[in-house]
Length: 270
Image 1 (cartoon, rainbow, N blue to C red):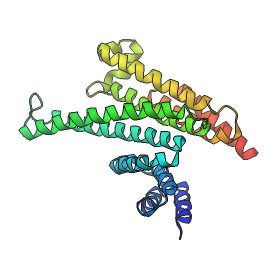
Image 2 (tube, rainbow, N blue to C red):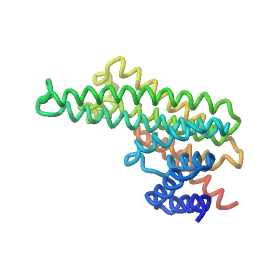
Image 3 (cartoon, one colour):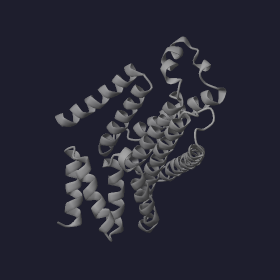
Image 4 (cartoon, rainbow, N blue to C red):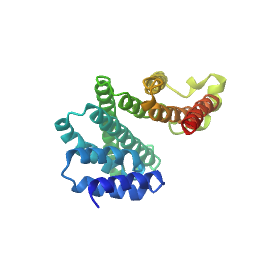
């Protein structure tokens, strides 16, 4: 089977819910192809179909390899997408390191450290977390800046949606700091969540929420009523609805889901 046929097979596998099989096929093509366009297409598709929790380190390598050759193709839409995906992956890596730091602090000697090895591990995880967060912010900013210079509405919608999801995760991550999450919703209803959060935390929460909302609005709005953008628009709305659910705005989230259902029904009727 040639590369194009295998690529189409991978897309078919993913559409039928066989994510692992689709990932294996795409990785096989990615690692063997000498065609730069096919390599980049596989890289983009891998970021769509592969499970981040299992493969985030491998996916970062995939993004880097694609970015090393993308300038020869002069495809700014693809480059901006790769940067957005890479930023999202580094944010996930940042969360992994932060969770490791929390577990180390919860060891027997959490007031200090139970072992010198734990302290070294904690400091290394802290350093990696900072590097990954910096990479996330830089990649996201570059992706937005680059895609805004294109006239590709589809790419603009996807890039803004991916970056919006990332900032939404940052917003949620700050809210759920260890030992605070159990009380947050209750205190928020009372209007006294400031008890839990420092002035810096509240500023960051507001900043990430504003960015997430702004980028989702852009991802949805750029599509307008253009027929070739409606699939991307519905995906952006769906992602926005998931974000709203994550931050406990269920009524608003349901309205967005109903919009997606209506768009899907209209498409079927046509």
